[in-house]
Length: 325
Ligand code: 8YV
Image 1 (cartoon, helix red, strand yellow):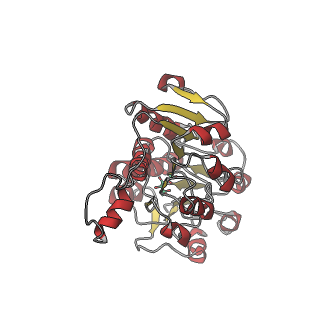
Image 2 (tube, protein in one colour):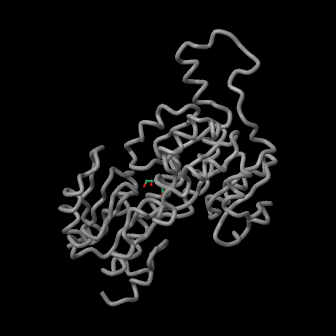
Image 3 (tube, protein in one colour):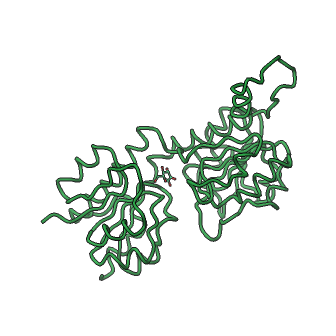
């Protein structure tokens, strides 16, 4: 009998084809996500789970799954998975780094440029039929070329964003716990947190979410930014205090924001919808076909490798493989 695998979202047919030889698959082919109860009921008989970032994998779910040996998430971020609880139960977890780096860096730039040059705001105005005449001062935005790009979290995606800044003759500064390898080659200088906030013309957030990064950008931090600055978040909801950001935009304490991720998404803080000069996208940072297929196939390759007794390709907690279950 093949081991049972639960796939929580409709995934590319190539992935099902790759996995079906090895697993008996329970696949959610509906557009709606399962409720936590339904997810728990279906997962309870499975040996492996193939999840996405909007599936919460907590201790209660693990508790309900006595046969579970592995979870493959189709995301690089893994704050939706209680890794400590997985370690305690000897459950291997894998994620999907690298394959989405460039597409996500492109998206950061898409939001940066759209926010800085007021693309969404002016398009909404145009669509509303308000364009009666041309004026010198219509929708003046901020320069991107030659400005200062700030990056909070200089990992793989942060470095890819910084590299693009070179093409716009930008000064690049970043804040990280330690010196980022390769940053010097990109001409990027490490600065302290408050200096990053104060000096960046365009600040891009690329931090994972954790209790340590919860609301790392709130009222105080927004107050340190330049009134002409833009803030871009392509990382995770919750690292920005969305209500404080909407208030800062309304009060013109910063000039613009581009968000792909939100606290409590897919629900949005209504004040964001009302805020001026904000560009909002629905968590599509990695959403190009090649990137999403790359992520989906990498998650599948991890499952297949482990099932074949081989090392996983991109494990998050490889140590559990050595520990007795
Ligand atoms: C995913 C992401 O598309 O990889 C991540 O961590 O946030 C996105 O690239 C999304 O999480 C779907 O799982």
